[in-house]
Length: 107
Image 1 (cartoon, one colour):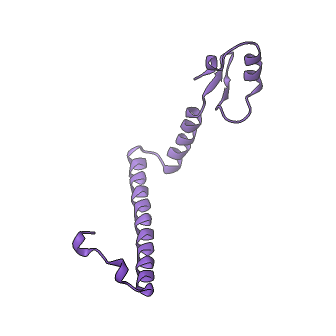
Image 2 (cartoon, one colour):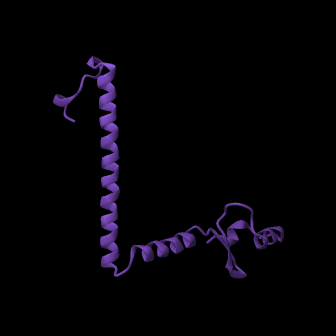
Image 3 (cartoon, rainbow, N blue to C red):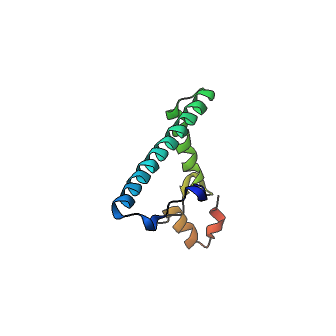
């Protein structure tokens, strides 16, 4: 909006202000919908370029995110991991009680 098109809101009555608000809310909803639609179209193109489906890409992303969220790994058993959230797993509690440092297990 340029300065020449600026609306003097103080000069408007309540009904006019409500109309502006409703129009603005509708425009916001339309722009959000268009943004999501555009993103989806880009996602479809990426899937096509990758010779994959959107579902395959999302599934791969979930696996990657799971791997990325691992913060600690048992040095004696690579299958045992911990994200650093919630209760410490038994293998970690035992190792810490035996004098090991938490950072010994950092990924």
